Length: 307
Image (cartoon, rainbow, N blue to C red; front, side, top):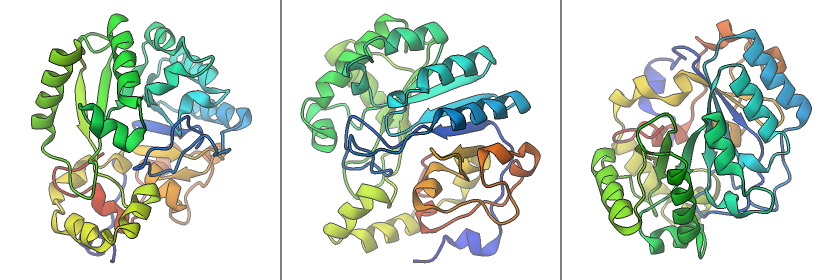
């Protein structure tokens, strides 16, 4: 399938630079079935301290207000804590994309307290509000660990509508689009509050990206063509304004620059003439750059949008 139709009609361009997304590596304590980066405990790629220092150099050189740390499990990178503290000292808003179960790994038990002390925003994976739906995608026992982790975050003040922000992420458990975000958010609120006394700020519904393990699942089950057609038929031009690639630059573990972490996984680098590494960062050029696209972009532009 070709790139989305809108790409053939006009070039998609960045509309600013508000977020520096930093992928600290592909190592993770989990190996979820829908993971688009194919993270696992066996992956060895981690951002080194030299590259992490270059990321901080970008913050010193320009006024990007938000740093978004992702992985794998970003917390497994030895530079993680220093990077979070350094970004906060520079007055940047820091988002950590956490799988929640990382809090139960050796040496990671104090992460909730660290996040609360530094005022880090937590974006936590919870693919569904029922145990069976979560454990089937992420592994046995993950739901209960996630619930316990959310309770710890709530006890520290997260998700109470104040300064400690706790957002959750839903992913479909198969080859279908997510339901309306506002309706599902209400279902999550009711189920987590009544069942476990848990509160949170926002729910984000993500569309499964047809790359990585999810693409392998689609190919294995003969659903790839139908899924891609479903995404194409649901293309919604109203999503273009809010695409994350229009206000974000993604930094890979090796310091290479991309329009988003999906392009990073596919090795789809920035167009010719633009900086290719974080040490060459040029905020003026990057904030209005043309964006590299492919058929996977259909996932971000289907229905109500994803990212």
